[in-house]
Image (cartoon, rainbow, N blue to C red; front, side):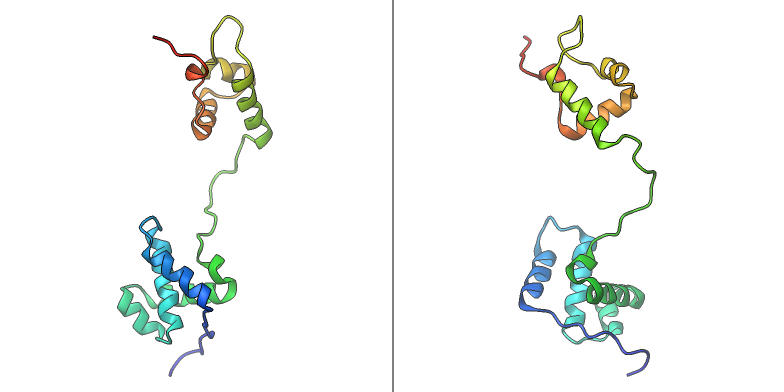
Length: 147
């Protein structure tokens, strides 16, 4: 045995079942399923080099996910938050757009359009459209049916 000693990886029965379920589910992201397979193989006592060859990944990846699992258990297999621009519209403004969309009607119109809502709430039309899409709002279809 060469190199640094690896952290002992012991799984409880419920953890083993959860990891196995992750690898078997059709809807599991393939990256998460691969991480679960890495952890399961490491828990069976197989060394990192053999696990890497068997799963066709690098030894660095195997050691990374082994260490993450030992440190954080199942939460260690989740994706870390990705970098990106911070949100510019806070939850209170989003709530205000949703409430106004559902509870009021613009003067001189039967329903809100993205442009009128954007002008009223001092947001961009794109921002209003994204909010409506995220929450499944379709003001032109609310409580009316036009033939």
